[in-house]
Length: 254
Image (cartoon, rainbow, N blue to C red; front, side, top):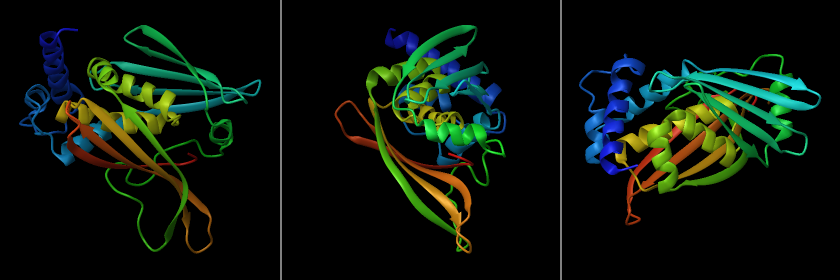
């Protein structure tokens, strides 16, 4: 895609964010200018509002079909289009992601998916849901303790960023499902943060470092929620660090 047409697309997309998907944001927020001029005019609170707006539309369901876990994630993207992410996970960790947006369907093969995690989600008595402050803050307080689970790192290169500029959260979430193997609701949340960073800084590369914790109640060690700590580092074409964004997301079950 030529640079001019991409800029026009970004302008249209950003206006769509302001007018349609992000009606709670101040109308003076300069999404379009920031994306085109590569200046950082999107504040931290504006980014969090973008993520929260998408998060409010997320619906996730699970079922088991002959030992295959089926996860269906639905949400409304920043351009107002409805998205469906249909993931299947087999016992050996392989599967398939079928994603549909604007009546267009794409498929990706999956590997290294955690069958145990998705089995837990599918058999949980309470359906997976966000709990507490899902965006912008950690779970804190003396009544909680964090138990470390894992560290992961994933690089979004310039080609992927160009795809995200066009496809929005749907593309970002799909990349995170295949790259970081995240559950649907978490992939959409982190993907929304990634889109906000791309629009704010127009980077050439983004590196996502993620730490996953189980949060337990301190008094009896019972499970409360999973907490994802993500740091997104944005780099320009010369490899210089342009921006650092921290995000926190909680999800029951994983």
